[in-house]
Length: 227
Image (cartoon, rainbow, N blue to C red; front, side, top):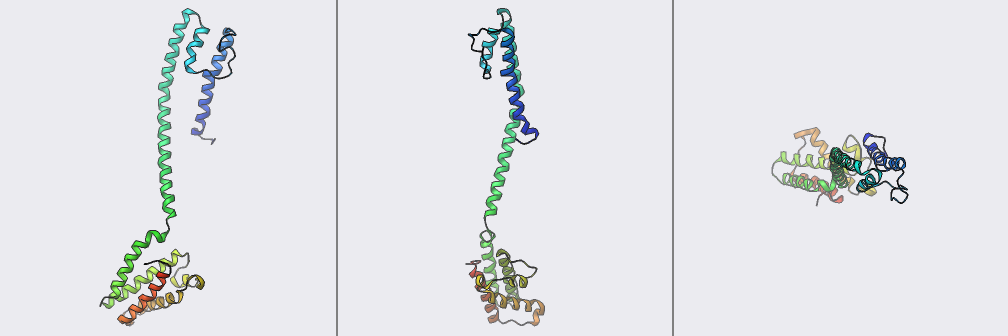
């Protein structure tokens, strides 16, 4: 049992129960020298609350029995009333524990879902936007398509567990046996870098844009990042 206040409650209640239903009755029996034929003569187990009136009848005279019995019922009532706050505390603690366990279970279930499984619908929508931009007649849209595809490549590398400050650092860690389209990824990324560094000075043709997007597509489809 933990050495905490709550952890001490069971032992405290156990001690109180022994005091009320074993030691006190045993003392009464010993002092009053109850008949050996009495069921309480050899007290080995705690008596129940329902047997206390019988013990009082055997341990007291006719005149004192009624007052003792009345006192016992008053004591029982006060004990019951005094137990209600503890019962409420127990119910509150149980409810809080249940709520915490439920949140932990939800967090555990969420952790079991991989990044890919959570992100596939959003990734597919992003890829559809890349395709739409690459098929447009707007050169600015072509550049945005390649830049967005490269961001998706970076996220894919993160999902695969590659670490690094840049995409190039992550791709240098790739084992070709586990990444068959790595050459396509390198080629597409190099064109993206030229777009970023050269800006509009790097001229793009519609045919070139579709070729670069196809390179990214082969990478994403290898890892089922898109459909």
